[in-house]
Image (tube, rainbow, N blue to C red):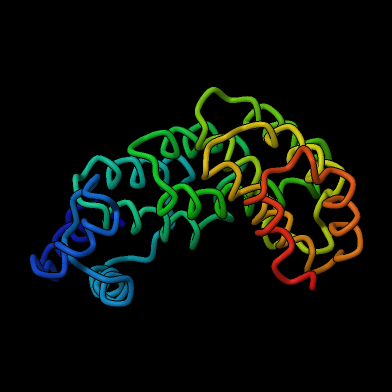
Length: 226
């Protein structure tokens, strides 16, 4: 697996007309090829036809993701996230600094949330042998970059019964005073996800800390609580 066939496959699908609304949706901040998710992933599959299956190391996987991140169009970042997610079992906690560096590069929710999922997969798997592995997310929670803090808040999404509830609630309170929209949204999203398994606990948390949490966080967290 290497960069040239991936880049060639995606550029072959470029659609300048499609790129206009895609760029506008992202407030004009980023460049696009104009390739939606479905065709993008299909093009990626075709790029690998005839090539050997990827058997590289974690370092090689991260290096490929970083190379894709250097290309100007946003679709290459999405492809990097897809590759990291597909091969996340090759990654361990030593990959977290590299992933969090990607989080801080041309950051917006479209890339950050996908990377948060990869971080969550890596950390959850590591918990089996290192029960204290979430200390890395404790550090991320106080990182000066707000998107790294968002990753910390979201990293337990989908963990279900394996969610560290005490840590989740502690993170929500730690970020409750922040005014940034994406942080407040993340707090509510993480709580809402946990409410699927522990609705009573989340409901009680929202009641107890209603004055500390923003209205946005409370609304997001309570969407399915009735």
